[in-house]
Image 1 (cartoon, rainbow, N blue to C red):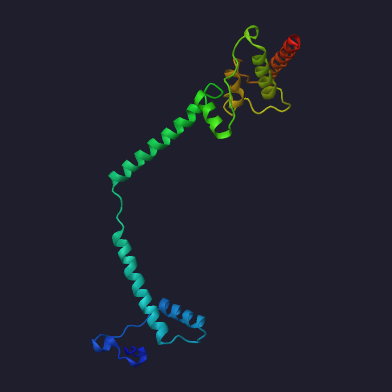
Image 2 (cartoon, rainbow, N blue to C red):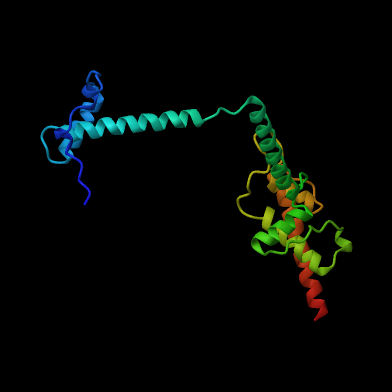
Length: 208
């Protein structure tokens, strides 16, 4: 059976055997040792508390030194290359989002496809034909859009702080209508939508 090591207070001081002067704990280490003793229910720290605190501090110092040595600051060349890659990726993502929206108003074909994938809706391009050339279904679609967008009681802003038309106003371009910048212009488009819906209803009744 192996012999158990002697308790620390029965072993000679290794520093004295080596001819070295004894070291005292620093004030922060003493405070940590006293806290450990209080947690264990002792009024004052004993030898084991002091030894544990000294050993723990040494290990943490060695570990932190290794971490500092392992850390290597990235070179300016690598940082610049990483920044360029991030910028290109962000630009590609931004360009992809921009292609989904037509800057003149409405969605592009890619935008309608993305909308179908996300929400399952099958959007169609706006009707830009003249009234005489529209089918009854096209009258219904454009009339419904015009009333829904510009016939509501409270309209969203049609221009921003710089006087530029908002996306809500620009949607008129996708349907072949002048982009409204005033409430009166928006109401005219809504009135046209009402007329188209009435024509659609009359055409539907005639077919019956």
